[in-house]
Length: 328
Image: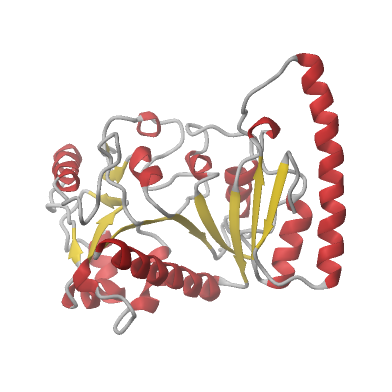
């Protein structure tokens, strides 16, 4: 469906009841948009203002849940809407399967285009999801380079090291098949690790990971995890790291656990960005539902909720629990 102000993209099979529900929602949005236009004309307001998803998200999210499918919303600049590309899966295992499929698709595309696949991965729950690619897969790992989105400044064999955790899950298998991993040196000095990692990124050949006009490496795929507080990588709310726009890598120094992280410009420069969120616990009975809602629909800034910076850029792969509050 297209209009002068709004384009809605539905990327999953719809029953007739879903089509009726979505059509009614579209009419409501058009009516609301007309009212907004009139108000804007009276006030003289113009230009793009970042805003949460439109009220249409309620109906579209419901349809996506019912169909286990994918939805997309895009609004024109004047409407203030932002792009949201969301895939809702049944559970954690389904999210993991979908994530592995994205990795394989991205690898195939990159290798067809330039003969090499460059990608980044974080720590956390996404590590377990990627175990689905352990062993045989469609990816030729000898033509791939991987970087960490974030990593603690600890020896690589430390049990808290993301590299160490990933080894048994999938990384040992990938490296045995020829994967090139951009590793930390294994020191506890986060500042030195930041400098060394930035140097390694800058030295990547252009046929492996070409830089953009600003000299920022453009990875073919960046997988991102999100904390309940909205942190992505080691970019935590209300910290200087969220405002860094010059460096490729930032160091986050803490008394107990220092780390390095790709900066936001590097994350956003990736050709494809995917955020995966699934699972819940006793501490967080709704999983990351509140965080997902803030990231996609909240009135947030990059500083207040860093994950909101990926609104309009990323594909969000969510389980039903993580998507529970969207459109509500």
